[in-house]
Length: 258
Image (cartoon, rainbow, N blue to C red; front, side, top):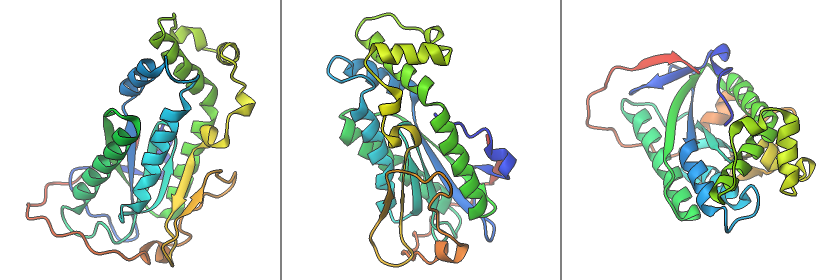
């Protein structure tokens, strides 16, 4: 899983409870597939799936990218373990809307994934607030880079879950070094260099400021991520406002991003 450990250094704050962002700030929702459930799914599907179970990984990516059609996000980054959605500037402007949007995205991601995989997989959602889109871009770049760097270990661990599902021995201590990870993958006929780009770096989608054609990046550029270029463009993506919730506002608490 692409860790968010560097986000707090970029002035990102995790939001707990109801929250309306300050002027000029951007909300980002991170949705993560439960790792234990994913490991269980890999094991139960191991007898019928090829090494690494690319079908399961594609399903998670597709479920994440599908959130671009929710009408609530302007940009989505998805990989085989999580998705990160940048909310549109006009989505959370009233009390209660941040929780409504969060719950909707969690439900939609989980529902799409269950239909694609054929079994429910628990999803954990988190909301972060960033000072501006430039900082969001840096945070997403860190996620992509960390996800790419984790590919050997992530792939070997994924294969290990399949081995256990087939009744073969595997323990995390067997893939502690890069050499051990590469060796295990090679034993299964997997060449790291032949894995597709999306396996290494994930995929992104963006709603354009004008028109309805979704822009898809199956191969993320090595430099800048394709976020909306400016705040004005970010807010230009018009949509109907969410209905006002009839509940009282709960106290909003912010903590430093993990």
